[in-house]
Amino acid sequence: MRYDVVIIGSGVAGLYAAIALPKHLKVLIINKSNPWECNTYYAQGGVTTAYNDDDIPSHVQDTLDAGAGMCNLPAVKLMSENSQGVIRDLIARGFQFDCDEEGNLLYTKEAAHSRSRILHAGGDATGRHLHFFLLGQNPHPMLSDTTVIDLLIENNRCCGVEVVTGGNRRTILADNVVIASGGVGSLYEYHTNAFTISGELHGICIEKGIELESMEMMQFHPTVFVANNWARKQLLSEALRGEGAHVVDENGYRFLFEYDPRGELAPRDIVSRAIFDYRQRTQKKVYLSCEHFEGEYFKERFPNIYKSLNDLGFHLPKERVPISPAFHYAVGGIKTNLDGSIPSIQGLYAAGEAASTGVHGANRLASNSLLEGLVFAKKAAESILKNSSHGCSESFEIGNEPLEIEGDKEKKDELRRIMWENVSIKRTPKGLNSALQAINTMLETNIGRLLRLRLLTAQSIVTSAIKRTESIGVHYIVSA
Ligand SMILES: Cc1cc2nc3c(=O)[nH]c(=O)nc-3n(C[C@H](O)[C@H](O)[C@H](O)COP(=O)(O)OP(=O)(O)OC[C@H]3O[C@@H](n4cnc5c(N)ncnc54)[C@H](O)[C@@H]3O)c2cc1C
Image 1 (tube, helix red, strand yellow):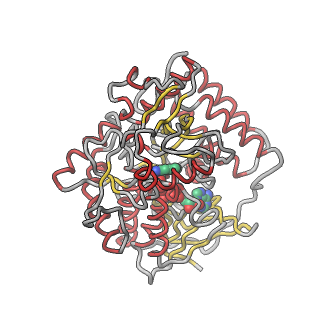
Image 2 (cartoon, rainbow, N blue to C red):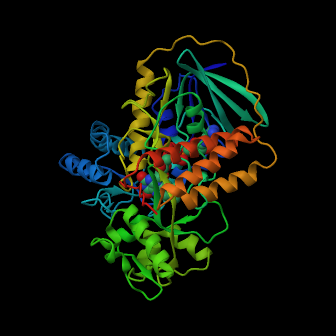
Image 3 (cartoon, protein in one colour):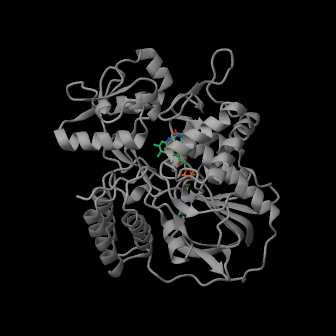
């Protein structure tokens, strides 16, 4: 069977693209594990929207400021101008953002936003509510526990995907493919991402000569509880600092003001670097203190953080929580046009965290990513509907590279350690070059396909970081 559209990923981008495609089309959504094991499910703070038409220039400006002059202005404008539309669409379909008692939408503020313009749902469970809602709206079939391991490309046209499903490899033919596979979290030792997020599609694009953009721009979240045993570390939403939580050392000292006059409200990369530096310099532990919140309000406003930290033995808001920065978000990704299409290949699109539309430049403004996923997934679906399909071959060879071989797991762990130590918050030419050498050496050894794809993605992050010799946005490089 040939599909009209195959969508790789069932996060916000994959599902919103699916919803915009009519039921009579043959659409298949593929995801690696279960449908909710994605970053969208874990999003806490909210979705940005221009508050009203008058706020568009200010939202655009805040996004450009966060992006440190590297944003693609037409993409930023397009995102902001379409923000109220996608929010209205969600509400018209029945999605409930948090409202006050009179039914007015509640807007919150996060770091580096010049006004309150972030909508949330379920308090701090925006992602979970949105994801559940979009799953319910999706009219198309879904193939879970299935990993895409290759794109079928013929004469600069994408003709489908190769997958491994139920232990078997097979091809799935399609006239259009949307990559909505998210970011690269599993490349790092400490990260906040779902375990399914490991950047294979970026690696496949590199193999096919498809351009990646801004891969050195990887964002680290400043306030993460990393002492749990899971691969995914527990994020403490930016909204906590936005609403009054303090970052303190073991003596209760708010050291962030030594680094930036905005203190806790400085952009997240500045806060991440400050915490990283302060810990290194003073050897002191760093905590997030929520003690200024009133107990009942905290429970109601941040129910998930309250519960998950309570389960880990912390009694919020009175007890402070030890924090560290951790990898959080891939700013760069697969380069796309404004309609989500990938410049060099017909029938191939990317949206969401996997893509680089250029809206984030050198750094992402908080809560702009769910919005980007919604706006550009819709654009991709609209573009697919406008473009007719072109013939592809009826069958494609299945690859014969083994997926995993003995020793790959140890090498994956080694890669994670190397990326965390040398390619994270503070980078040096020496550290980056040693990371590149280690990655290149691993690529020359006998390895399986899944590890090869991760290594290619990591290689692209490191080579981009080496090329950018000046610090900008989230890329912070020092000579020693
Ligand atoms: C803890 C946390 C909190 C966040 N909070 C916010 C917030 O408050 N506001 C905000 O705007 N953003 C937030 N973000 C960022 C935001 O959630 C993500 O950028 C966004 O949800 C990404 O959506 P997506 O659809 O691109 O990818 P995802 O939601 O990550 O979905 C990726 C999908 O691709 C599938 N996939 C991956 N690889 C393969 C493969 N090889 N084969 C088949 N399927 C594959 C996965 O199974 C998954 O279904 C947060 C992120 C995290 C981790």
